[in-house]
Image (cartoon, rainbow, N blue to C red; front, side, top):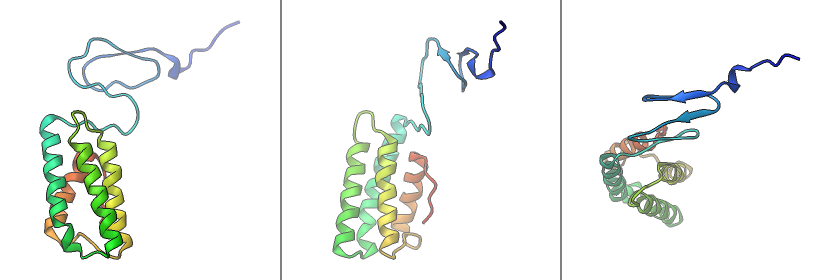
Length: 136
């Protein structure tokens, strides 16, 4: 009986650059390694830029003039995002989740950060660093 080798069953040996496929083996690595889907990694300078962007965004939140309940939600989410970004190895996906919640809360409140440069500029920076599209 003959067996048929499927393309996805072949072994792939990785090297520098991007390696994708089924059953991947990666040898010695100097640098970043990422396994999974939708992965974003931050360098030390990116981490500082993310923290700066979050703090800058936080300062502009009062300009939204949100209702107290919405203000509380946004303040809690930005605080949680900042706390995550301060970690030695922050998870951009967690910051992204918090930031998406902020944007959603602002939209649900009928507000927009589009016309508020104190919010829009840091929002663009944050969105880029955590790998999200910014639809405001």
